[in-house]
Picture 1 (cartoon, rainbow, N blue to C red):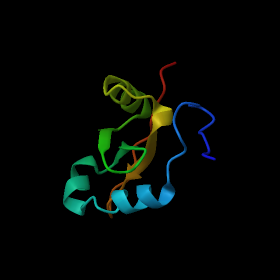
Picture 2: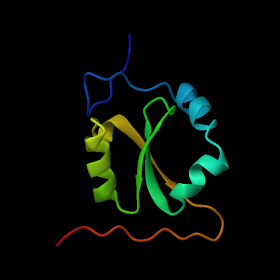
Picture 3: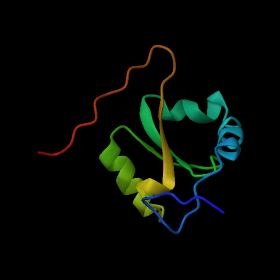
Length: 91
């Protein structure tokens, strides 16, 4: 029997081994343009969906790609010497 993600009952819970294997294939060169940003990876880790400096913009870009935030994995990309900028929410 499959497990299902509680926030998205139609999508099976991702296989973390598959995600880790696919995510590890991204090179430093591929990730460098996203330095200091939040990025969204596909649930299987094979695609980088979008990157943005703030989470609201990332949410917009993920939706523009036809997905919801609960369909992706979020990660901050930080190379040595980079600091994450605060993500502000509108008041």
